[in-house]
Length: 292
Ligand code: SF4
Image 1 (cartoon, rainbow, N blue to C red):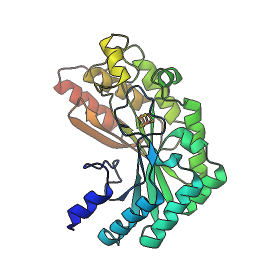
Image 2: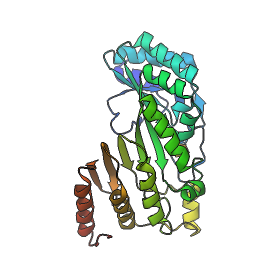
Image 3: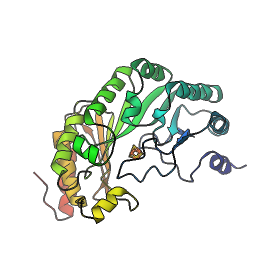
């Protein structure tokens, strides 16, 4: 088999999505789908949730050991792999050590409740075994928006889980969604999300403006006019308010979806003004005046 055919043999889908900053990791497919699968805006989790049998994971590791023997960091693919119980995660890490001893660090997606179901001791043990970072869609700091979009977590649960990751020494990269509250709750989404983020220590905040996908319940709400969709300009003004209210430190802020065509990126707090000016400039290109 060619290298291409070997890669194709171990992944379910033709395209593999790795989050920003993990693009160079070795991707190991551990599960498919999301164990929650209820968020009304989500088009991401198309597969029925399943954790692959150890035999399949082992076969993938054999192939990856041949293709990428020197790599040091691995990403466990699956919408929320961290929901897998600690014992099984440790078995997968142990198997990886056998086939790919150069791998020293692991990263994966997680939901907040996946973290809360693990004890402090389990988190510490996973850290010790190489779990270095979790990528988590926290989406909003507003409890009413989270409830309305059926996220299944509250902002205080998010803070509790992330502070426990701090204690264990596991880094976290967070995704938030400007526009998720619609026009009516735009101010609340910005201010309450900033308030929540200010209580924790994300390595990275990635803003992904709300995109309405046709097959989602939120799309149907928008069609029925029970959700007041925001324009890209309104959304970036909401994001500007979020940035203004952020006091996080040592955190890379980025948005690859600004006005559907631009990327902004900067360290907080040092480059807060640069980010705000960049937004004002991009708005001016669209003939808009910035929100104050
Ligand atoms: S937890 Fe994430 S992957 Fe699962 S349904 Fe919600 S947004 Fe989608």
